[in-house]
Length: 357
Image (spheres, helix red, strand yellow):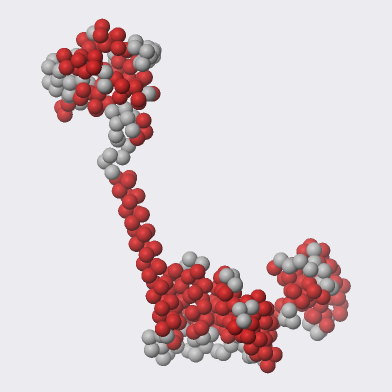
C-alpha cells in the first residue's frame, strides 16, 4: 500500500477510536447506528479503508488515538513546569516523571540502539516509534528517535521529538543537545544556542565538553549573522545618503552633464554661485528644442561638448553676457548663424517644440 498521508492516518485512528468506544462500553448501544454512520462518513470523505490491516497498522502501529492524546494532555500540563525549570534553582519544583515504560518498549529501544550502531537509521526510527507508541512521553525514546531523524537528515522531525522530550523532562540533557543540533542545521542558530545553554545549566559544573562546544559553535554563528546584518544595514544607509546618488554626468539614469556644458560655455550665470539663468534659456525655442533632444540622447551631449566649433563659440563669449559670472547672452548666442548651422548637422536632428498653451 502506498504511504498514506498524515490526514488519512488520523482518519483511520479516529475510526479505530470510535470502534473501541463501542466495544468498551464508552458509547451506549443506543448510539451504535450513529457511530456506524460517522465511521462511514469519515472513511468516504478521506478515501480510506479502515478494514485494511496494512492501513490500520500504518496509522496506529499497535498504538491508539486515546493513548496519543493522553500523552499530549500529560505534556500540556508540564509545559509551565518546563518553563520554570529553564533556570534551575533549589526552589524549582521537581517535575513529575515521564510516562512509565514497559519491558516491551525497552526491547524496542534496545533494538533501535542496535540499528543506530549499524547506521540503519530507517529501521532505528521504526523501532523507536514502536517504543514511543507504548510510552508516548518517555524522553529517552523521543530523544533517541530525534537522533535517528537527524542522522537521516530529517531535522524538522528531530526538532519536534526533542522539544517534546525536554517538555516531558527538562533535566534529560541529551534531549537539549539533540534539539540544539537539529535547530542549528535548520539555520536557527539562536534557538540552537539557547538549547545548548539549557543543557549546560541542567548538566551543572559548567556543562560537558560536547555541550559547551555546541554552544560555542552556535554562538559564533549568531555573532557572525549579527555582524553581517549590521554591515549590510550600514551599506544600505550609505547608499541612500550619498551626496552623489542620482548625480553624475552622462552615466547614471542617462542624465547629461548640464553643469559641464554650462562650464564649457563660460562658467556661471546670472545668479550667485555661477548658476545660469535656466528660465531665460528655456524660453528660447531653439535652445529648448536642443535641450529636449540632448535629454533624450545623452551620447549626443558628449559629442556636442567635444565639437571644436562650439568650444570656439564658448571662448568668444567667455568675457561677456548678461551676468557677472561670464554666462553669454542667450539671445545673442542663439542668433549666431554658426550655432544654428551646428543645430542642423546630421548628428543632431533638432525639432522645434510647440509653445505651451
